View 1 (tube, rainbow, N blue to C red):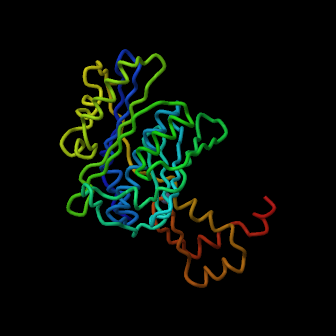
View 2: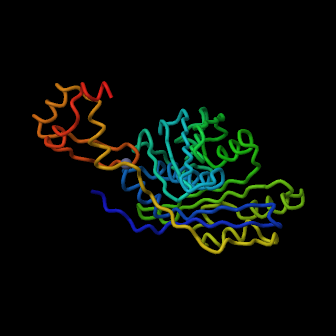
View 3: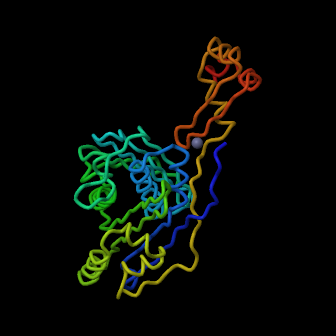
Length: 303
Ligand SMILES: [Zn+2]
């Protein structure tokens, strides 16, 4: 088992400018650090997946109404990372993984920031699947803008969901660990005036690098900065969020029903079978008795 970090990440919501701006922010420091530990992610891969994990949690809240609403981001670029997948649910549970956790790049020479866009690649696609409110799953996709993820998510929201928004995502690592991670989406609601949008854009431009804001300030302070002069009204309670997968030992055992009798016998003869969850990298060691207790392959095929 992997040591699980205390669920100390959280989501905050607010509105501004008389309800014509909606803000959803996440402090995802613990979520991203747990993702780094579980998947043994390189420094830049941690930043890439961390930004996507934060975005998936925020999108699940923006797009879903019920607690079990889920949003999955799949980003496939032509960079060394291969692809990444992040899933968030409106109840604050987040999970995700990347194709190549070892992939890494040196910092950008222009500003010494992590080269997430280079690692993900600029030529590719962002696909968003919504599992919302008991409706059929729905997937929309856009071409990548930069591979930096925040810009790509903003472009997706504007073009596929007709939701004009500002998307800010950041991961700051220090001493080989995630020191701060988070995200903020400011959504323009119907009725937002040009003056409100201009003020919000100027606030965000004045903030500079989002990661630097996260390093120096709490999530609430960052949200106040984004909505400066726009009468930010925060929802009273923060919502806890954490890295939590939907896998279980029972599901891992059940996954073996797809193997035939001969293959299962080989697994039992080998002393059992290890099943690895790609979402969270949990390793389940399934023992021969558990394999023997599964339905016979023929029975399952008829079911
Ligand atoms: Zn899992």
